[in-house]
Image 1 (tube, rainbow, N blue to C red):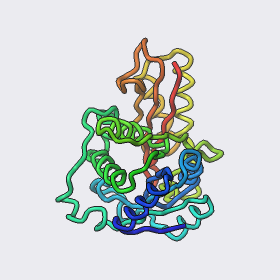
Image 2: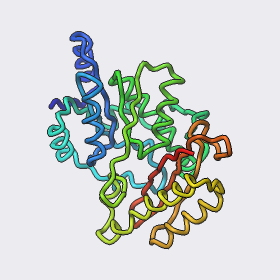
Image 3: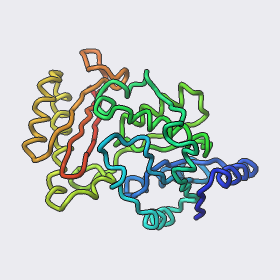
Image 4: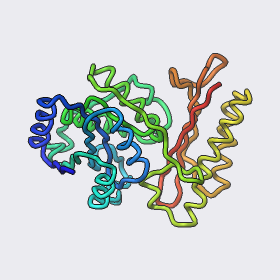
Length: 284
């Protein structure tokens, strides 16, 4: 497996791919890889000749008092997992390589009209999606992939990237990959590493709350205020600190109504040092 740290070397590698007529699938990550990330790599092999994974902890998408400094950096272990998954290239840029003029001088990419911009993560983490949109745009320009794969655990992020690619006419296919879960239902996440054994036994309550709301929606209960209230209460009684629950129509991301065909339930909660997010889609 090849490790590339500079943009110059990356462009030389990409030029050689073009010369040989090889297609490229891209898996952007912040490292500290788990089974969910590796599933993205396995899926990537189905869509292109070569797979490149980036490892970059993006400071631009961390807000004030968030866990940028504490975010786990496990590069050697990550490379071992990627090698086992037959990943071809790791792009491992420094902050200086990604932002040569510094963060304050960086041109920002914003997706103000995207479906991700007016609820849930966007509301609770101001500026987060500008950081995501900016680094994804830069990575896409650097790697120039044919396809890129993103996990559906970060549902709003997937929607944002889809809007970004569409609005900027990027010739990249975005492939969402279903959330990988533990047997308990807990979504695989790098931040699960913050959890103690006791907290990890509590954390599945997040998925249980989603499942209960999904069951109610499938049964025809569209009283979203009541469903959200009961879901928040369930999470809190389990020992988590709720951040939000949102129920949105997947077609336009507004609150569901009698014409809605599919909904997504979005949830976030704090447990110890970790902030956990999850979602479920529901056919109505």
